[in-house]
Length: 262
Image (cartoon, rainbow, N blue to C red; front, side):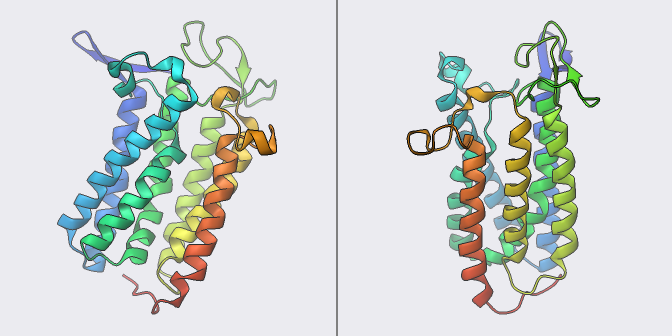
């Protein structure tokens, strides 16, 4: 685990931030390549990428701070993303409506565009999970299995000197498989929206499973007054997004004309 990759003078370059930037570049590259093959306006697509990423980042940070208010005592802390502190479902909650709105405003084919993004999201997310592993955030529960990893004594987030599940690597590996599935299925989709539906459902399954190995239980529970501690926040959101995906993309998108392969 190397939370700090190197220093530029006295400024530390964190692995979490660097891998997050790499994830953004890889995801954006996939989206733009597929958009060009489909003949879509790359300038408009770049605008959607930029603004959706900004809003998604703010949403991811906002949910984390709401779950962990003690981590942000000033505006500087609120905006400091270098060492961790983002919730993926916060990014989806904030970013999806913005993406839909901008795609409609710019005249981009909405469901076809989300299909393109469905091929990029899992791969870029896998890279960002490596940043989580390096930073020690999103750490796993204690275990004595052969797969266990132990964070060093100076670990600031994960419990030091305690063997834990490398749950970040579990999820990264699963996301690579999800990415392979969505990219292979892309040319075989029957209608626009199928690929993004596949992504939502597969990731919901992955997240629901990997959450059982998570050790950072201070993230809260989903509908705790109603369900108690039956589901973690992310497990609950996984179910919500899977159901919404089934309703929206299976119930509505399938009525669209057959997909144009490119």
